[in-house]
Structures are given as structure tokens and as C-alpha cells.
Image (tube, rainbow, N blue to C red; front, side):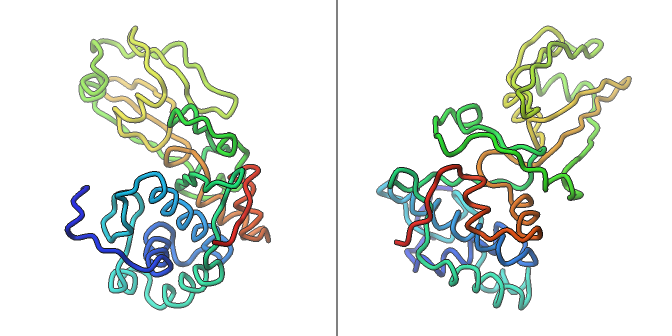
Length: 256
């Protein structure tokens, strides 16, 4: 939705409160919420800088945004205190790399590692490289299993449907699938992720008669900060600065 008619320019910090409330559970630790606040603020400003027509708006072009009523409905008083506190405690703080605003991607949960921006978005960024994120494995949403009808599976991948043969699964060191051959047709992990609407590019496909079972580890594109990883780090006593510097390698926190 690129229609800007329902968009309106708004105060940066008010906007970030709405974004943090939309992007991360208000029940998360304060340090995780602060890391999200800095990442969301940086991402919004990065977008504005790279696209002169971009305006801070209540549309969800890039980041989920909740209005004050939405926030109260979703999070209750938690929003008032926790989310606002996280944003105001980090007011004006952004992440920079070599003096320029960083492209601060983030996602829900990893497979135990984040992934490279180069592979996922074809963006060569030294600060968006694969790092370990072992905290993610402690959370329920780390793994999911779903079953698809075999004919549905074949039509989405546009492959000949016979016995499902999965071969030549090429995984990176971080276990995300880089390439896989299914019934003689070769795909990148990202193509399978997109075509089948999977939660992650760390997937395992098993054929069971008329159905196909797919297990995935992680949820999201895998680049940048893992939100559940940030929560795990916060629970282990890390501060938001530590969290940001772990997921966005060699960046600096800069005050606007």
C-alpha cells in the first residue's frame, strides 16, 4: 500500500513508540524493547534518507505500526510504561556503520544463527553477516511442523508430481538451505521459502504418501536482529547496546 493519502507526518519518537508496540511483545524485557526501539528508529530514518518521498506514516509499508488505541487493546498498560520507557530511554539513538545510518533489518526468531544480507537480500553489508544466536532455541516458536497436500506442494513449486524426491540439499554453515533439488528441479532455499510461504529457509521436507511434511527452524528472513534472541540476551543480563552490537557487527550507537 503505497497510497500516502492516509499517511501523515508525525513526530519521530511517537512514531517509534507505535512501531515498537507493533513489532515486539510489550511483555519483553526492557533491554530487548530498547534494542528494538533503536533498530526501528534507525530503519525508519534509513528509509527516509534513501527515499526522499518516504514519510513516517501509520501505514504498514515497512514496519508494523499500532495507534494508541490499538496498543491499549493489544498490550494494556504495559504499552504505556514499558514501550514508552524503552523509546524515551533511547531517544534519538541510531545505529551507524562508518558514519552512515545502518540498514537495521530484524525478524522474529532464528535457527540458532542469523543469516547474511548478501544471500537473502543481495545486499553486501559488512555489519549484516551471520552470527550465532543460541538463545532462540529456548522458545516455543523456534520450530514448526506443517503438512501440505502433495498436489498443492507440486503446483506451488511447479514440478512434476510423482514420488517426491528431495536431493542435493546444500546448506550453509549456519544450516539455512542455499540450494535444493526437488523432483529434478533446482531451487534456492529462498525460492522454496517464498513459493511455499515457509517460516524460514532452514527447512526439511519429508514425503508421506499423499502429504508432504515440512519442518522449519526459526521464523523470518533471518537477517539482522533476532527479536527472540534479543529477549534471550536481555534475560541473560545483556544490555541493549550489547544486543545491538552482537546482531549488527561493528556498528556504533550514535545520538542524532
